[in-house]
Image (cartoon, rainbow, N blue to C red; front, side, top):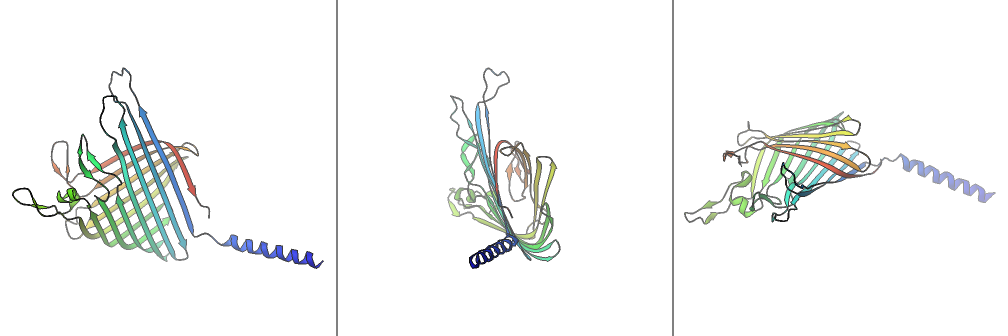
Amino acid sequence: MRNLTLFVLVLIAVNSHGQDTAKIENPWKLKAVYTLNGTQTSFVNWNAGGRNNVSLLAGVIANAYYKKKQLSWTNDLSIALGGLQYIEKDSDEGLQKTDDRIDLSSNLGYKLKERYYFSFIGGLKTQMLDGFAFPNDSVRVSTFMAPGYINMAVGIDYIKDDNFSIFTSPIAGKLTVVNDELLSNAGAFGVQGAVYDGLGNVVTAGKRMRGEFGAYVKMKYNKTLAKNIDLKSKLELFSNYLNNPENIDVNAEALFNFKVNSWFSASLQWTLIYDDDIDIRDAKGGIGPRTQFKSVIGLGVSYKMENKK
């Protein structure tokens, strides 16, 4: 009888501990989505013309969210790398990039009142591989951390819910990094270029960094448009107090995800960039600031991993 009583007491203790543990909510929410999209195009006696090619685009979108009491910490990472290869017998062209992106952002906030946080945010944008000016593929126009954009800001974050937030900061810094001698000497991406003598020798090397101080606004908006169709978007605005504050830098993204089933998906991504400090040569040979636009369509496999609270 004594043994039976002891056994029952142990069961009660274990069950009570399990219930107490179950009540403890995990403050971390982790999620990662891996995608691999590809196309292959070939032509045989095709009157309209075309070039045989194969392309692949891989991407990772990872999120780590921490929330406990008054403290909130969100981390977002987006990586994409894609390329296209012509597969004609007489083609000697190398692999051409179709996408190359590293985008990391972090937001540490302290809750002031319902939906309002005092936040510090930081971000890094760059790429992984060299970029070239096709068809002249010997001219490198970008590489890892050339450019690299580092943003830091302190301000107020209004978070309505998981799908909508606006961060505003009157105290923000933007650092443009051009960690490449050739590009920094050329004054690429707004850094101060090199000074040359009459023989073309470098007297003073170009600057590797350019700092800006100003105001910053970041808005995020997500919405389920229809069954298996999701929209994720963000808009970033920056005004440099020290130089032409009326010329606002713009970075906008819209990503549409079309879910076919648990494995297959399609996506459409639009990216728009305007930076008054970046000179771009247009089709007519003119040089100056230009609105940059990129569209990427993908169809392939998708796999999601996430923890459960």
